[in-house]
Length: 135
Image 1 (cartoon, rainbow, N blue to C red):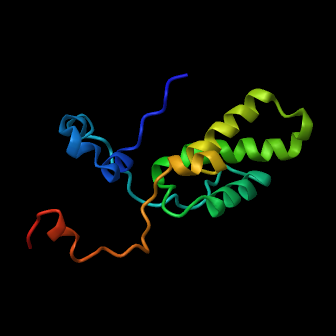
Image 2 (tube, helix red, strand yellow):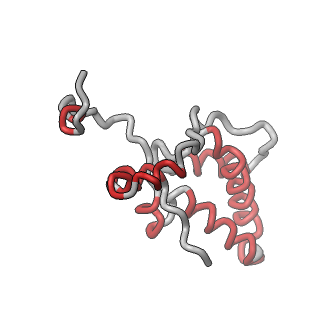
C-alpha cells in the first residue's frame, strides 16, 4: 500500500516549501474546503442519526467540513449497521469503517496525521515581522 500523501498544511508547518518551493507550486490549486459539516442529512434514520451525531460530536474541532458530508454519512450508516449486526458485521465493512475513522483522526495512531485549524488559536502579532512581511 502506498504511503499516504502528507497534507499541505503539515508541509507548510514543517517548512518543506522553504526547502523545496516547487513542491508548493504542485499544490497551488488544491481546493480549500469551506463551511462546517452542517446538520444530519434527512435520509438518515434511527440509529444512523445517533451515529452521525456521535461522529460529529466526537471528531476533533476543525477537522470536518462540508466536503466531508458524504464520508461521514457512510461512516454513520456503517456504524449503525455494526451496532445492529453485532458479531455478524462483515469484516470488509469493518475495514472500511476503520479506514474512515482513521481519515478523520478518530483512532489513536491516526490523530497525529490529521491537522485542523484551531479557531481558539490567536495569531502572534509579530509573526509577520519574523516572516519578513511588513504592514
